[in-house]
Length: 260
Ligand code: COA
Image 1 (tube, rainbow, N blue to C red):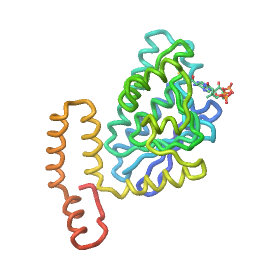
Image 2: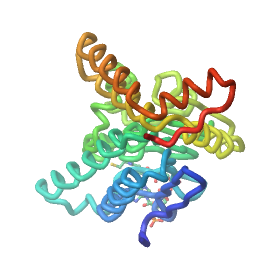
Image 3: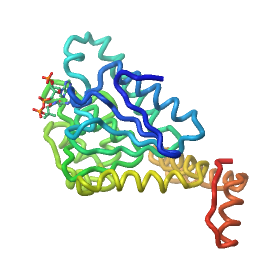
């Protein structure tokens, strides 16, 4: 299917979804949010896709935020719908059941930072810039930023970024735990592709269980989280992938996982 605001590419089991509005720094209007929701739904349903990379077109921005021109005319009811649409997309990405890597080469601001934080792994170029500048517009983050930044970086960093509206560089984002790796701009594609290829070869059911356990664990008590881990661990013993993985180890060969 053709999208107006996205580009989709497949490389083996890695699907790259690129927000493609570079003249607007890939700002998220309603249509783009809807297309992203469709694209991620399709990726979740396609067994041939094992990893998703989310990127922004052009050199300058991953995504520079929600579309301010579109939001300018919103009524509170429209704003509520916009926020809910964005939040549902972020939750869809977070709960996709397959690893999602954000490739961040430039600005990841407002809704762009929120989109990146909904991904499981964030690889940033040293040129990337992050921020929640909504307060400068008399607004607050509306796609989960107050909640995911709090969980990723803690209360102090969440309040400082959201209240100041200031930008931070990739190194500071790394120090705060907002990005998982910072690399030279020239090394960004190689790093993202390498990680995506590695994750694409991992056992898919085990990957899904790890994503689930870590995400659920962040929202439960340690005892509930440990119990969830035990159940998921036991369930892994019912999979062909577990037989293949352990047999391959004992036979000193590389395992090939089929997600069964
Ligand atoms: N929504 C809508 N349009 C946006 C946008 C956004 N969030 N961010 C950038 N754009 C548009 C600009 O309006 C401009 O469009 P135009 O050429 O039709 O005028 C184009 O993208 C290029 O942006 P520009 O501001 O000219 O680039 P810059 O290099 O001077 O500045 C930024 C880059 C990121 C600092 C600046 O664009 C910016 O502050 N963007 C808004 C960030 C923000 O507040 N995000 C949170 C929104 S809730």
